[in-house]
Length: 142
Image (tube, rainbow, N blue to C red; front, side, top):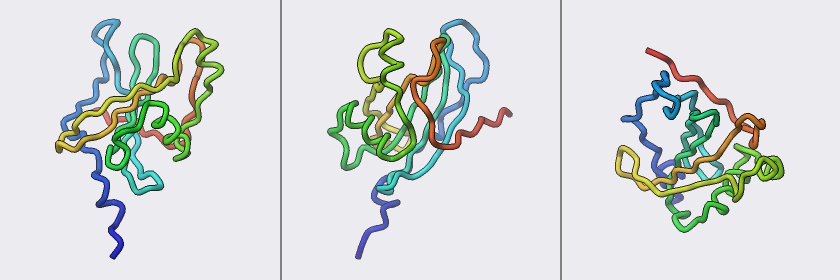
């Protein structure tokens, strides 16, 4: 019997995350939006959009199962292959940045699942460095 892919990879649990909508000082971050979906391999993901000090970021969260040894470069290729994002590496490097515009670390979600936290610089005063390919929802302010 073939196992359902949705059970192979745990859904990311960010239940304790509380978005911040008000910047109290220059260094504060502000949360802008989110998206959820499932990659082609059945792996659920969550995307959170946030900004700090004139820079906007995307942070993707998804299970490390079967990809626990991926490098940041491998994770970048994975996201591109899943057709959720497109990188403008030339513009990123021309703006004075170095590297690949992906930082990644392994963390535990609110259920204790090991997940990847992959953060990407979206844009700053020089314009966008990536192009999003999925619908992003705004947070509901209560």
